[in-house]
Image (cartoon, rainbow, N blue to C red):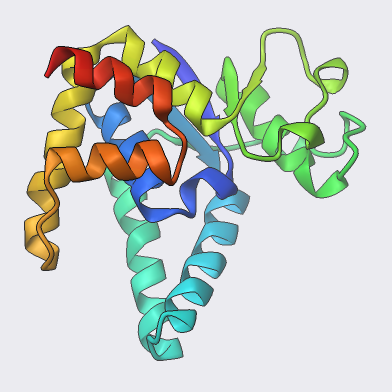
Length: 192
């Protein structure tokens, strides 16, 4: 099974996060992250919720609940012991060193990020590929299209508990249009 380190920037957009984690919940790949990634996600998630009208206290609680749910759902995803490797890769942005360090400790074959320019291949350990989320989604969906479609259906089923019911088609359209999961969505539509 492929292990992938998910950077904060791919976990922050709600539906993209839900799709990637739902693929993992179906057993298509193993997600990993560090405590630093989760702390950054919690901060940005709370900030997003405040910008959308939530009170700061409520936003903080909701963001903390998201992190708690991620830890519970993927109890082996949080990488421990990466701190000693931080700073040893010479990345253009030293703030990204923790991402590579966590990927190395996790044995990840991929770092999934939107900031691919900050992870030049020449600076990465052998065996770690940097992939944008749309490319990673395509590779992941292609490994097991029926399981990936079940993941999309599980998102639709959960949406009813939150108020607005999303259909499979609506989810696929948003993943296609907003997140550019064009190739992944094409694979899923081929098996519908």
